[in-house]
Every structure is written in structure tokens, then in C-alpha cells.
Length: 79
Image 1 (tube, one colour):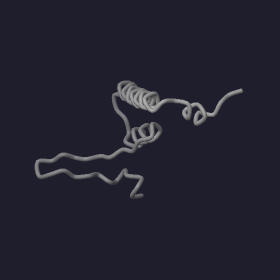
Image 2 (cartoon, one colour; image 1 turned 135 degrees about the horizontal axis):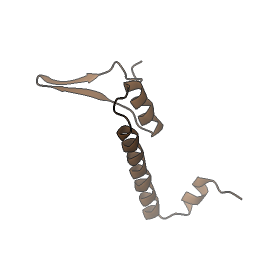
Image 3 (spheres, helix red, strand yellow; image 1 turned 45 degrees about the vertical axis):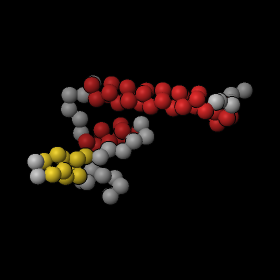
């Protein structure tokens, strides 16, 4: 019978859990890099959905000589 992940995780050592979490993080970064490398041009909404699918959120900041400007037009948190 298939086991629930939380049941399996409960039997893991803290070190194993940390290694597993680190590996999952590295896989997410690799997936994001592969998706970005396959695109020569991408809409902000597409990038935002991709990042959200990986459990993150997109924040756009323009670095100008006069200072940084956070671009909120695409921010779903303020929508």
C-alpha cells in the first residue's frame, strides 16, 4: 500500500529531511533555469506563473541611477 509522504518523513532523521529539502530546492532552480533557457523572449505573466508553480513569487525591481523602483503593475499581491 502506498504511504503518505508525511508518514515517511516522520521516520526520517533531521539531516535526511534537510538533504531532501536542499535537493528539492536545487531541482526547482534547475527547472526554472531550463524553462528560461528555452525562451528567447517571455511575457511577464508567463514568468510569474512559472515561478509561482515552483512555489515562489516574482518581484520586479528596476535599478536606476537615482535609486531602485519596485514595479508593482504585475504584482498579484497588490491586485
